[in-house]
Image 1: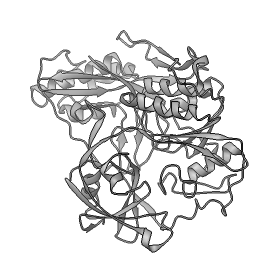
Image 2: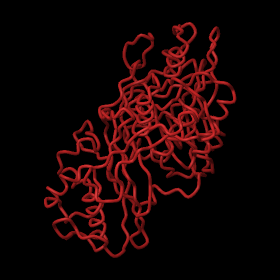
Image 3: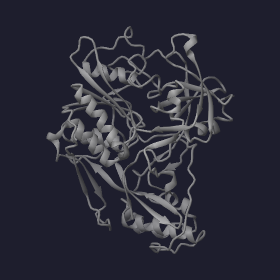
Image 4: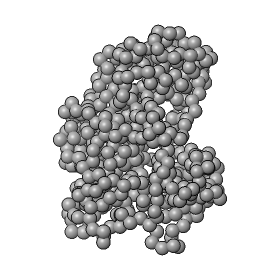
Amino acid sequence: MKRLFITLVCLSLFAGCTSPSYSSIDNPSAGGDATSKQIVDYIDMRLEQEYYWLDEVMERGGSFNRTLKWDKYLANSLSRLSTNGDDGYITDNGQRIFYSYIRDAKSATRTTTTTEGFGLELYYTIVSLDDNMLGFVINNVHAGSPAEAANLRRGDMIISINGKTINRDNYMTLFNSIEHNTASELRLVAQRQTATNANEASVAATLQKGSYMATPVAHHSVITVPNSDKRIGYLVYTAFEADYDEHLLEALATLAAEGVNSFILDLRTNGGGHVSSAVTLCSALLGAEHAGATLTELRRNPRNKTSLGNTTTLLEDVGVSLNLNELTVICSEYTASASELVVMGLRGLDIPVTVIGTTTEGKNCGMDVTRRTFGTTTVEYAPITFMCVNAKGFGEWGEGITPDIDLSMDNTMGVKDEYFPMPRAEWGDLSYDIGLVAAVASVTGKKISTSDYSATRANIAITPTIAVDRPFVGTLYEVEER
């Protein structure tokens, strides 16, 4: 299911200088300064050589508007093609958003796993509390961050920042002050959705920027249920980031050492990332005996002019083995790309995967990401260059993976949250996190009882109202310099 939302957050793109390496396909670059022309040439080079739909590029490249500056050129050119429907999605206001992108690498390059900021990640949708009052829901709090030290939790709803109540006039500026660290200090007032009394309902916190480890391994634990022989490993993984593969393997090794015999993988907010990290995760989940098995084949256009042809990606012996023979995955419309590849790749190996949540985004394609320096500026360029298929040759999940249990509508579990995956509580909470409650019930075969679980009874009445785009979500890639 291609996501629909109003685009409210943008990244600015910058350019540098170097000598051009390629002349444009048909028309010479005529617009903008010399640097812009050079980068347009670079865009054309890879579209002609590697873009998955390069056949139409060759046919229609003469219509590309090379008077545009480079930061507008790629999207404008791709919008002139008709065969590349899997490259992106349409917003609810009719705007075409492409997965392919080019940007200044300063917005993407990280030289260390340590991050400077507040340690808060906000949920993609801003909620309405009344006619004008809005709230930002915390989607994740990083361990060791200023936010954790201030006792903020996932599911808390921020209603005031630096003394200003959030409303329709100021929400974008205030959203950016958190999500993009544009403030040096934050004084927050939040409401705790899981509070059981008025004294716990309001949380006030003052945050100063600080250093923390922004690992995508947000949570891992062992879940046991009375009168069940299941020891359930639970892992929340928010992005496939190769820089943190060591953290991923450490968490999986801990769960393996604790003797888990079932597993819930929470990918509800995981938009994808490195192919290599997907291989690492699946290799550890299945164990060394599956080393050498095909997880996926990355299929490129037969007319691809680089040395890159189809690539078969194999599972490995990563030194950690959970030896699973089935898996339960929590997904949502924000689950994309490498996350979807894990589900469909394991199914291609005849590993039963139960999906709980809502239909995923539907991104069955990926990009070979390159970086090139133009003077003092390095640009990162990622056109879609391949489609994914599993070991059975199946790759038709471009409309998303349909869940076995859809939590946004009436289902066999008897629990429903039409706003799923809106955060309600901390990771691992078996009282308010309906996704986890349903996953545990599915694994154990036990019926959910509202006397035991209050997942459908969050204390604050909220209505999602404005969706905010996170730039470049849904990526499946490897990065190289060329």
